[in-house]
Image (cartoon, rainbow, N blue to C red; front, side):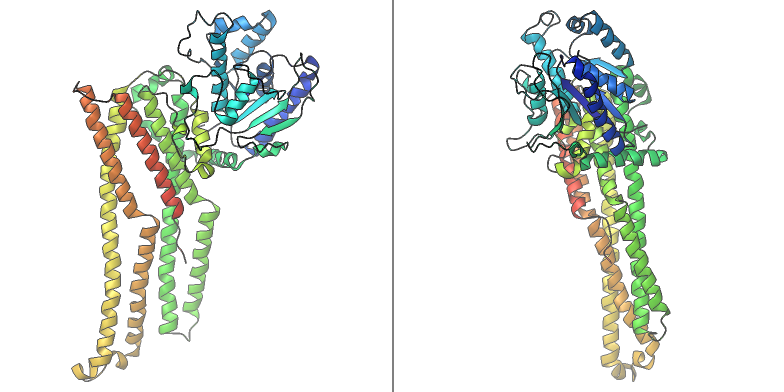
Length: 568
């Protein structure tokens, strides 16, 4: 199923008191069950390095609750196992066998497999890396922690601090999330379950505290149930309910042979491609629904003008026309309300935004880039679309690994494909805009012509042809009045529709995108032909991706300000 998982991370003490273990298990289980009930359509997964103590305890509970276990190792397994005694090593290996995915994080620059064998700063940097990785890629970080803010590198307190602020002592700068000076951390909450250490048994065990990035902490567990999780679960529900529309249209994105090789090339690609296909197809599906329903409302509004005009100008003694007008008004109001209630317009925008972000992420990885789209996407729309950033980050937990480059695929399937696609769609939308504007102008012109015709007949009819045609034929006089109102009203409705879907703005945006990909194509050709260039292929592709993400964010903002619905 091509859904986005709700991801938990775990950090905590290695030496909780033995008599507290069962209480801690129940509190962890309570957290899992609350989120399972709140997000019934969303799979849960846990990131845990399976260290002794808290990491293993939470992993065991997760497996009991049928939650997927993913294990990022801070260093090669043989070196990591030096931390365990014989009993805990066997438990580690047993849990490792039940994990759905296991991978080893890269060595921090300056570290080698030799200098991390002994305990010290080099080895601690690897622990700091795995702690930061888990905090960075989880929706919710569970911390079995006593709450003491120690300054120890890679300690539980430092991992919690990283989740809340984006900073960790001893962690290389490239692993800190990029942010501006005035940005607040947006990596999600910490669910602290107070845990006493064996060496410090005086703490109250089992209390739950929700630690938030803005320092507005809470003791209410339901603080975790943020709107972003509701949006995430709604997407996953739509995937399940519309599975016919969420099946593998991602095939055009990559050549078949490369798709077959993806598990070896990059294990996380299958998840990214699957959700990309779901989001892309669902956006198209709901866009078609919105267009059909909007056009139906426009059509009903058109006939409302006709029947109201017929009643007021031609046959006001018969209530049938007025009754039909009332029925059309009610039907169109219900249709607009239904679109809003089902959030179709919002889903079109959200799912399109998700798909485009995943498209960039996939091609960045195929370019050998380990940048995360979530660090550069929707920075100005965090409140409305935070679930998309968090979802991409949760899916993309292989972004800190090294990827094999396939620049020819990126050039052909992304740069050249998008260049041609945007140029073609820009022309189509430009043609549609001109066609609709001509119709609108024609309708208003007809109204003016008919009005002048009526005025001419009234003023000069008797002088030109000895009598007023319209006064002699009241029926046609009333029909003309109706048409004088109908044509401009229809033009106004069409103009309203064109404004709401922002056709002219989209033409400009699509032209900019076509030019962007055309320039990128030219620059990549220069690089591949060994022509002297000031940029590498990776720099070009990174800049293309950031520009695409910026344009997508502006597109969402433009359409959110102008929702696709018809005022009646």
